[in-house]
Length: 323
Image (cartoon, rainbow, N blue to C red; front, side, top):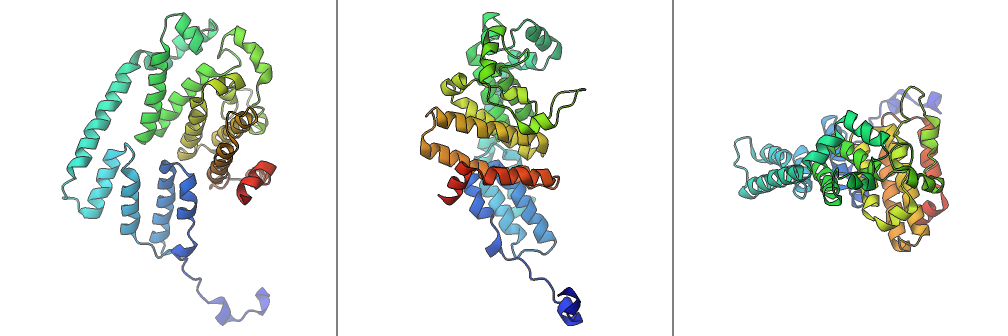
């Protein structure tokens, strides 16, 4: 067919994509709010290349609207000035929100300062691991910290995420998960018996071990006992937060491992009736949409497409698609 086309036909310009075909608004209800910003950046690049009929002002207005519920106040102020001029006075409510955000951030930091310093001290952390005390129970028994302080640490990780500091949030969630994980020196020997019940046999992690260092995604972080997941519902939220950080930081191999952990946890909780059928359906729907970032990114390979197909063609996920 190519060889029979006339010169005139070959010179027909490609049509400019219309917002009608843009799926951003279709998938946005199933994404974390922060994950919308990379999509808006993509639309900005399409505008710059004249590949869409959107305009920059509309995208900036949408970005400002999305920023309002977050703690990214400085970014919101920048966008406000972009829309209203560099010399425009920032609304008083924005200044008030900024003050509240900084005050809360300082309050959370102060509340878990000692534990945060400990978690960043590799030598001290190694000593606790060697003594089998690097777990919530071990740290409390050794009078190193308290349950309330550890929960403040989790809240600070979430607050950093809401401020757009995804790297700090990711590092803190790694620490928080390691306190709950089963395996190696992450928990006490008494808890190792539960390792047999560990469900996280990550195909991604098994295929990418490196004898000179930790496996991609540090799958040991996700060795969470089913009994703990049943009693600590916030852990599923933490796993979602960890996955979101990996996505927003563009850490795709780590994101695949985190995605597998979320999937496995959802199915375990659904099987144990901790998640009701409708809740499990909603969770699977979110997995489907978030997986598009993990498997369809500039660094994806053929094996990534296989992972996407395996996910979408799984029985329970096909059911979620068709519901």
